[in-house]
Amino acid sequence: MMRIAKALVLVVVGLIAIVVGAFMLRGNMHMWDRRRSTTDRKK
Image (cartoon, rainbow, N blue to C red; front, side, top):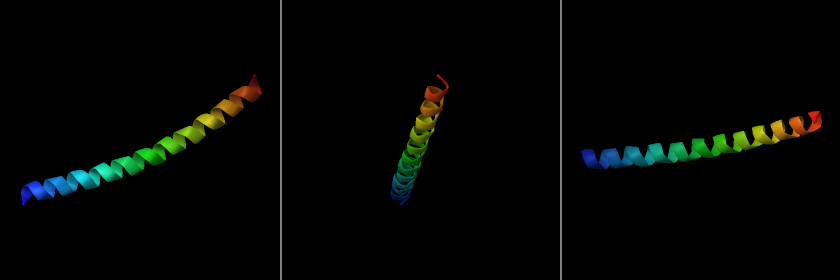
C-alpha cells in the first residue's frame, strides 16, 4: 500500500510541478518581451 501511495503522490506532485512550471515560463516569456520592447524604445 505504501508503494502505491508514494507513486500516486509522486505523479500528482510531478503534474503540479509541470503545470506551475509551464505557467511560470509563459509569464517569464511575456516579462522578457515587455523588457525587450521597453529597452528597444529607450535605445
